[in-house]
Length: 126
Image (cartoon, rainbow, N blue to C red; front, side, top):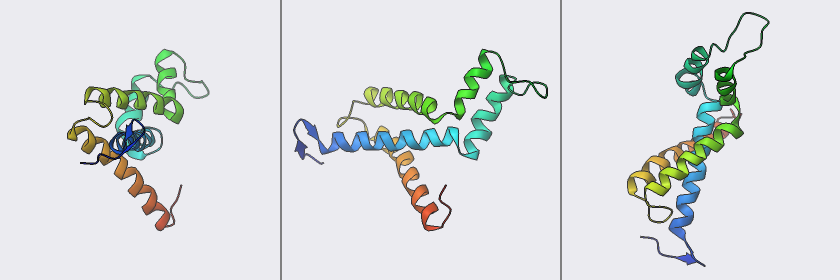
């Protein structure tokens, strides 16, 4: 177990926050950019909100306005981050959270890093 400390922040506290940030980046990108997020989340919600009115009309109504926010990385990132912070708190907080939280959030963090590194190595950086 890592016990090094910088002031009142342990290395484990710092690593948990780093994992949280990377997981937030990955989940935000999943919703706002990736095809999988579009197919599983945005497309069904756009149909639910009747997002595509007759040709030439702008989407209107509260449901359409809420769904349009799913394309905004700032909007989605805030709500995903808030949710991740809540789960971290419920799991014990930074430095004290359960291994289940670390592995689940860590999987998204690792996926984010691996995806970006692989894209750059393959010359497909977005």
